[in-house]
Image (cartoon, rainbow, N blue to C red; front, side, top):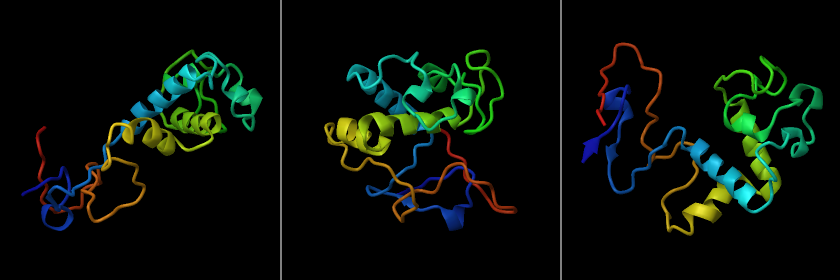
Length: 162
């Protein structure tokens, strides 16, 4: 057995990696989200990546979201910082933040009538037999600790090289 961690206190935070270990895989959600948007296009639930976001999410302020397309959300060129603030006009610049991701998740839920997690489980995980792969929102004893936690002062850390 090995203990796996990066930037976490060795003695207190790590657990041995074994057959039941589960790992949080950082930003993989965005890859699955891209798949779900592609599937929505394929199934005709979304007509085009150039559709305006407010055509699907009617509760959005059309004045704030004017000119903002699904493509802008996917490419981080939407110019939004949170749901109520525009920092640049859509398509004129690029800035990474989760506003577009969160709106795309809402869009997926709207067009499929179920959550992103359910779409991915039904369309990818279950058909491929990935019975040990899924969405976790809470810690559990099988989960290895998050890889990017704030370090605790005066502790030793093991950094693994991948």
